[in-house]
Image (cartoon, rainbow over all chains, first blue to last red; front, top):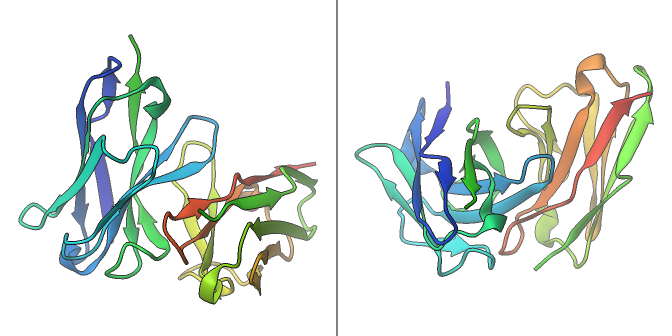
Length: 121
Length: 108
């Protein structure tokens, strides 16, 4: 069974940093593109960042480009999102999602349960 | 960036009725690279449809998708009590990946 478990969320002050983690199990992590998708409570979904199967190709939403960095660790079957210079508008649930293919330009066939990031002074 | 507009915002229907949800794109979605997801309160989204019309594994055949270019439709032929939720469309034909704002299907 595919499992994606996010961690690392919490409360952080504006301008602060946070690192989210997603631990994958139940499938060959190396063979899939992965992304982070966020959702402000009660609102819609927003793709944040994605990485292909090799880690060599990444993409970012304009709203986070230059502040967030996505990475993956194959030895730990983990996906990360390093978030810097956080703003109040970054407050959201952050979901780890698996792409259906090796690239990060396909649909999402599995999702984690999300971790909440709150940016507040 | 491709903007996806979903309508209606809310659909009030009774179990057994047919639901028709629309997703319109600001520009053509290449190769019908469009997916649909269902999200229930407190849960992560669940994939229903990909490639505009292909059902994901384990999705009942009362869910069907259609469309191409800029106009796409998700149809639920006969609503079951467990189908009431929020539905999102997503395009993956161009970067950045984008989602529609969602349609809530509620019990009338």
